[in-house]
Amino acid sequence: MAKETRFLRNTWNGKLSEQACEDVAQEAFMRVARKVAAAQLEPGVKIGAYLRTTSWNLSLDTLRAQKRTDLMDDTALVAAPNPESEDVDPLKELVRPAIEAMPLSRRRTVVQLQCQGLDDAQIAAALGIAPDRIHRDRYAAVSELRSELSKFIRDGHRKTRRAKKDR
Image (cartoon, rainbow, N blue to C red; front, side, top):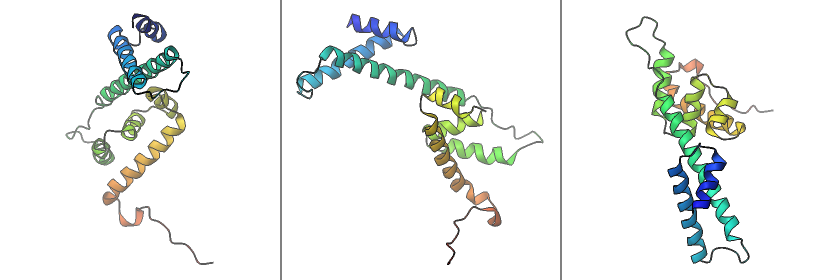
């Protein structure tokens, strides 16, 4: 256990606390022990290497969860529009509440980070996912927002599906 904890501390260079490294190592040991006890591992699997891979993957999951938590804390700092100011933007009054009403998911996080001015590469780095995934999440979020906000769009300006032309 001590060896695995030291490995994680050295690997992540202080990004994970010592307590987090111990927790990850213990969880990895427990998962591997359960698989060995249930005979779920193939014969010839090197238990030490399997344990190392398990602890590596769990530590990655822990770091990603910390990063998501930090990002969600940052998105809460976005100032709400001041209703008393003369320059009240109706889009901010409609769009921000619609974003806040979205389920707490990666789509909502992507839209909130984009509203803060981050580009796709920065959002992908912050969330630890591929840039093409950002595009898909944003597209799904915008579609969701469009359907939610459609009641505020005038009839002539709504996006509608076009009928196929007979040729």
